[in-house]
Image 1 (cartoon, helix red, strand yellow):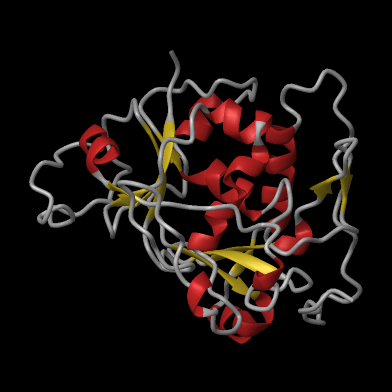
Image 2 (spheres, rainbow, N blue to C red):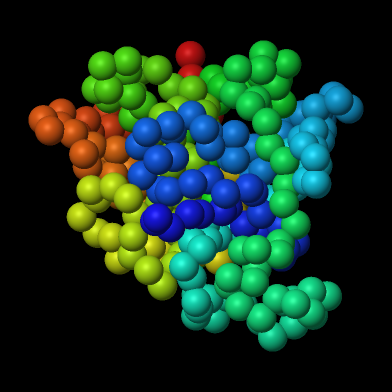
Length: 268
């Protein structure tokens, strides 16, 4: 039947409902999971009360937008038998005595509710799309810029001219999920060549958040963070085009005018 996946928070013992097979939600229906990035995205300004919580569906938990920021995140496959090395502590599931394995976690973690926010104009103030957002791996001190991941036009060619904050396709959500998947089975239901690398994600179980670049730029410089955008942009392209018969060429990011000049934090 193939392997199904859930996005999970190891610190809160929470997870989404099953996203289905990886090929289905990454390639066939990429809009279906774009809202997951709101779990990690810290709003630029306070949210209106009626938007602070994702409205729960029956038998699910409503959670605050941005409430997963800073937590250990994993895309867990239902064939997982082990955890990423060094990412799980003996005390992690003390309050959940029935969880002894990844499969237990997959089946027993608290299911959260998400809803489709991507076209919600009332979120443009706390989550402005005309700013550069960055996905930060807080564990490894790596970040990826939203303006450095080319997005797809209707004909599926790529462009850097239609920046959409963190909501592009492909975008920061796709980069995140492609690095945090974890399972002991390499079935991914798509033609991407590196099955094992995708299913044993190098970032699985790391801590993440999503922030507006200008808000954290001084911290990135002071602490020596690494901009991994170009590496992740090409990898996202390879995954995005893995089943195209005649894939278009990868579009390199336009060169920054001056390496000593910081990135503009707002797109004109």
